[in-house]
Structures are given as structure tokens and as C-alpha cells.
Image (cartoon, rainbow, N blue to C red; front, side):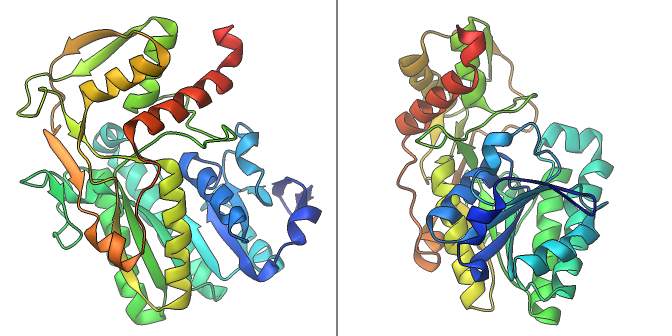
Length: 348
């Protein structure tokens, strides 16, 4: 159904039977983490109202609530009718460009989309009295912590425009909390990975950059897998990172929404497993579930720290969240299951 230039998908009638007062605007909700959060919202009695500029290519990601194809900020005035129609008072904002290297070569693209667009969104929301906001931030705000452990009380020191764009929005939210009463929770993701246990949704990009799906692809198709750096001062010489299952991330967003909706807060939390896993350990886990990988050892990438892990102590206490799905075996097993389903034709 087309409403004044807004492309709507999904079966609206069944969604409207739910509690309309618990409708949540999910910006970028057809994406990887956004779609898993939409499912988790629906499981918890909310109606996720998804807006995304790329819905047609991800039909599986819009099955949990009404969905609208909207290009922000160009079509931002279309939010008026959606927010009023569904009586929305909360927003979870995922929409952003996320490639670190691209942010260095084209910072304008990242500041315009990640900062200016978010500022336009915040001003539109407050004009419609939507004052509860959950923001998709990133561990990139930390830059390279000296000891490899990122703590929420650390002063952000991003080293690329992507990380800077997330830090700027966090600072804007602090000012909007004081001036306009916007209640917000910023969630600093570490390495999101894995897929929905039912394989209804998962990670699928045209230009993949994440290690788990790239390793699965190499195993399934017999292609080379480049391992960047084998001489780091780590347990096996390869980089160590903090991997957190996307379902755990989704659950944290629901808890953050509750916190922002019931308290006038401006908080920032780390979302990780708190466990350092090396690239080689990822490769071995993928080989267990998907078969042998042709590993080609390559030089380190510029700027790669040996280790980056989350301190989640504050998150466990203040958000009452602890990851329960984030073992590497479970992350890889669910990712392989999703890959087999989403690439079924080419694997036959």
C-alpha cells in the first residue's frame, strides 16, 4: 500500500491487533542488527514499526511489524504520519554507514549520514513529542585502548571518521537530554556476529567485510581467506576481538528501551561478550561447522590493534544484561545455518 509516497509492506491488520501504545519506531530496522531487534521487540509485546531505505532486497527482515520504505533525511516528513498513526513515543536508531576504511577515504559521506541525518531525525522526533531514544553506537569510539580493554568510563578517542561520527552523536544526545528532556541510551557494539537461531533472519551483505561470514564463504566455496597479521603479541599471533551474538544485542536493545522509557537518562553501555577470541580461533570454529578453509597469511592492516575487548561490568549492573548466546561455537553454528539457507541455490 502506498501512503503519500511511503511504500508500506507487511500485513498491517494483524500488527494493529497488538498494543498500539507499545509501538516503537525502528530506523534502519531491515538491517542485520535492526531486524533481529525487531523480532525481539515483537517477542516482548511491542510493535516494531520499521523504516528503512532498502526494504525490497530484504523481505525476510520486515516480518515482525509494519514496514515502510523511506529514504532519510530526504523523506523525513513522512515520519509525521507514521508516528501519529501508530501512537509512537520511542525510537531505536540503527541507520548508519559502518565501513571504517570508507569513512577515511570519504568522511563527508559519513558525517552527512551518521551525524547530520541523525540530527534531523532527533529534531523531527522531538517536534512530535517522541523523547525516548536508543542509539546504535560503536566500540570505534574508543580508538585503541592502551591495554586492549574498553571501559565505559574511558574518554572516547576515535581514530577514524566512523568512530568520530558515533562519538559526536553521543555528545549531541547529552546536550539534548539537558535542553529538551530527550531520554537516551547509546549502545557501543563490539563485533556483532551469528544469526537468529530459527534462521528467519541473519547477516547478508553484497560487500561483506566481517570475518565470520567471510570465513564461511571461503569454506563453502573453496576460495582463499586472507588472514591479516600473524605476528601480534597475542596467544596465537593473530588479532583478538570481542564477539557478541546478534540475539544478545537485540535483547539489550529491548532492555535499553525500557530504561530510556521509564527514566530520564543519558547513558552509554558496552555490548560485548567480555571474552577475547583470536582470528585463528574463529577460523577453527568455522572449519568445525563448515569445512576446511584455504588460509592465506597476509601482512597486518594499518591501525589494527592486537586486542580489543569490552568491559561489560556497567552494562551487567545498570542494564541488567548479560550475553547468553555468545559462545564462539554458537555464533558460528547459527551463522553457518543461516548461510546455508540464504545461499541455498548457489550451494546446490
